[in-house]
Length: 469
Ligand code: PEP
Ligand code: MN
Image (cartoon, rainbow, N blue to C red; front, side, top):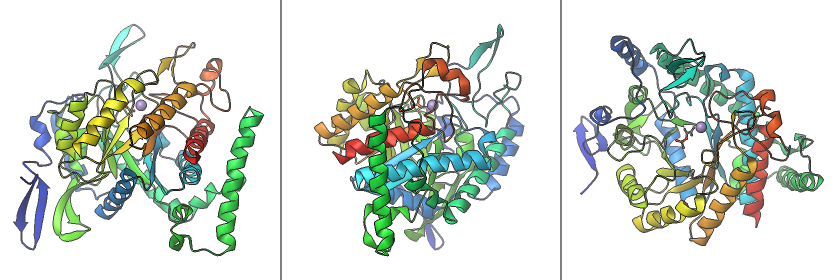
């Protein structure tokens, strides 16, 4: 039986998942819901968002679907990264440029290591909503509502009431961020990723610095060679060719379903304009968090109906049979790369859970993108009392994931990092050998600890090294 229903409307047909509408999630149990005191106010805001124009268009979503199909089939590598919680304040020239720069530089190293095109997805232009372990927290002896992300309430303890106007703020800050990203990419910002002007002074170990420099030199030679012979990079088919046509896609966790619904639109399928389908036009890629992926829940119901490529976070509590049931719902037509499984077990648990998840998916016939998020299973309390992550744990979870995939005849298709282009001090270690005692110097995150610029590059060099083997 087909999972789709087709309704003829004049000269176009509407193609949608069976019994699905943009509002069908509303009849399902929902986790991490926000309680707005003034429902009428919320409705006014949602109606306004529903009238605002798409931020992305089906053609872009379609292109990303094709690129992720390549990743699923082992022909490209996925790099996804950005802040844990994006703030409205990050919608400014400096932070946007810094984040793009680090993503582009990482992707250049990865292209080199993998000898494959790299698909770049930023956790950006909409990564505002945060799931929380507890709805309230203690502040100066008083119980207050937890910070839920800039699109719900404020980080300031006096500003914790959910305000629907913040959803409108989310739309406009996302749109402004995307607008600037598109402009600078079009104007050749991608040239900034040329390795000749990279600075590796932060690398403390001389051996490691030599190793990094070796990769940078080889990369520079390859790029110069292509320029010298006047190769049209788009014609050569070589992996480095992808550097001239830089695509950066946007993504966020699809948590606030009212907002996602308001940005769900029926639009012509670029591959067959006689068909109209449902697209989330607020971003290119959205994912379901580890806390909201219940089979019978509202989030899974919403996600099964949209054409966008989607991600699912998989932690230790995911059962192999549950994973297959989830894929049967979210990828009913078994389209390669439709779903990206973002695994995040923690260094001590990856060996225990990843193999059974891989085997279950292999037997199911779904062809997914396997991405490793080595951040979320490795969060610890630092000596100074803040949340941190150690590069050594991150590195180990990642290398184990690569090894396990290889052993089982699968392949790690991509990575998912929390990172920033700024010089923050939130994670311990890396080539700059950041110490626990130094964490408070620039500890700026409003949620989880992120890799800083240098630590993010460390990760790219590390993966490139594995891929070169
Ligand atoms: C996150 O990506 O910030 C997050 C909350 O992750 P997870 O759903 O995997 O816990
Ligand atoms: Mn996080």
